[in-house]
Image (cartoon, rainbow, N blue to C red):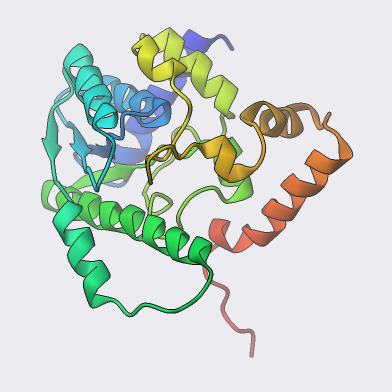
Length: 242
């Protein structure tokens, strides 16, 4: 299957899933990154009149918004913006703080941003009778690089069986702006944050493991440890067997 055929197949899959759920369309968070851009364009092809891109800046980098806007203009994707800065700051003030490792606090705050965005998307989707499309890809899902009940809280995952390199190929085929394709992958959680630095390995290494299993012992051990630790994020909550 070539990349154009893959795009057509994903568009058909989106139509089938949304209509089977008796929904009218799709809502997608537009982050300005490659994954959400690809999903947004696929959704627009599937539902030209019933796709909505939502920009949700939360102390975000201005470049992310400009990239999201450029994509929406190029593909005529309707958008709305919900600024979460003040809500996030107010919630942080209301929540209890604990004297623990700074890294844990940073992670908790980053996850809070993702969960506020999930709430926003579902509030909009419920009103429109739309489904929420997520942008997680196979590489990230496999090692749990997503926020549980945050960006992982979605209805459908069109890219869930594609590794990062395949998403990049698909982006080129769809005509995603090169500035989006070329920028370092980032969740935009804080200034200078990149996915690969946070993961502690490159997407090339992760993709190679998933597609060919040909990686060094150290990389294999790290990936499999991450997979095991994040297994709970890919499953429904366990129910006690009594």
